[in-house]
Image 1 (tube, rainbow, N blue to C red):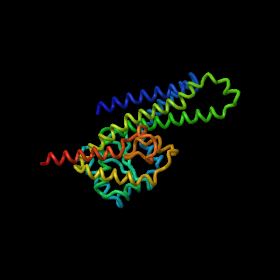
Image 2: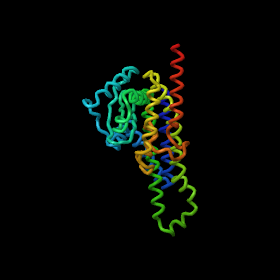
Image 3: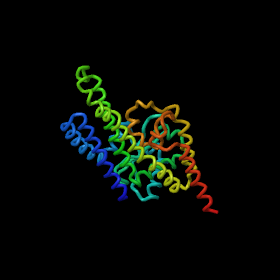
Image 4: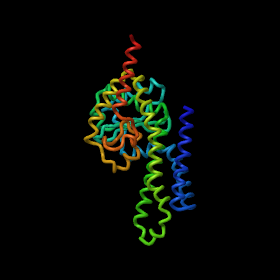
Length: 292
């Protein structure tokens, strides 16, 4: 627990410095101080309200307890197994099959499920996915991932705004700023890329660990493997394009990388599905060998 708090603190400091540096390049000392104030405000808001911002962005609604009593029962059982507070459960009305967890601590957390994943998976497969998200909550991955996603989105928005501002400047002014091309390119390309790489470094390892934890919590790694296989085949037909800004900046929060297979694997926030399934199958084999 202490290690994750240290990681969270280091992540906050690093991304705040990156944000302030971007402000300095764009508007000098004024931009630096503006970015510093903004980053302080953003850090405070993230600790207390980041989960609400994400849920609101996806128009999540509380999951109907009467209609989905079985899901509540599964989450309650899993939460009791690892001794954390019962997370709030949310419903996102979209055919995209996915799930994510958010929250600043195991005692203040939420799990969101899409209508697509509820319809696609059977009870055992859904239990595996929920155990995966519960593991993220237990390990405080939710706070780290939300911080990385929020700062990545803010830096991406900053770079995009700067790019548009540069495009609409007069030709004469552009010619006068030729010597500033290096810093401009740094803000537009390099800084958002650094933020994405930070997300990758955080997210990929945590996904493997959450899969492993879920396998041992449920004692059914093949159910989670089956869920991954089903969702991997299904998502190609219904996922949004990469132009969707919300999905792009919050992709590290999801159970499954929320875009089609095209694109560089090294720039995805999640490990390949085939590797995750293979690891789960090895865990199953280990469980069988221990029983013999």
